[in-house]
Amino acid sequence: MAEPDADFVWRVRVYWEDTDAGGVVYYANYLKFMERARTEWLRSRGLIQSRLEAEQGVVMVMRDISARYVTPARLDDELAVTVTLEKTGGASFEVSQQIWRVPDYTLLVEGRGSAACLNASNWRPCRFPPVLRDALAC
Image 1 (cartoon, rainbow, N blue to C red):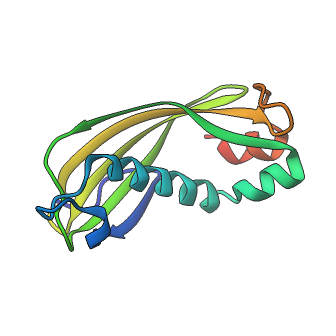
Image 2 (tube, rainbow, N blue to C red; image 1 turned 180 degrees about the horizontal axis):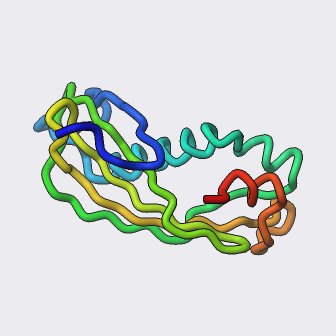
């Protein structure tokens, strides 16, 4: 199979620290891989999260995440973690994500999540500033 069709693909190698004693990726680490992929996806759209806070006064937080584990990754596997923007609102967006083993592109994990925009000073929901809204426009 070819590389998955997605808005963004981020590659990562499985290291010893990612696995349990049997050399299998610990389940919570898949969420870390998905978080890093979302961060790099935002970065690819010109959105640096520390800059959003400093310059726009907003932070993005995950408010919902789910994962379905299909088959395990193991020590030294190379993974392709995808991000696909599914929906945007005035103050939130939803993504779907998948984690594949490379080079055979075996599906390992499927996930969905939603992120909300919060005012950095009071942690209350707020609408996207124009720079964020424009970068997430489909």
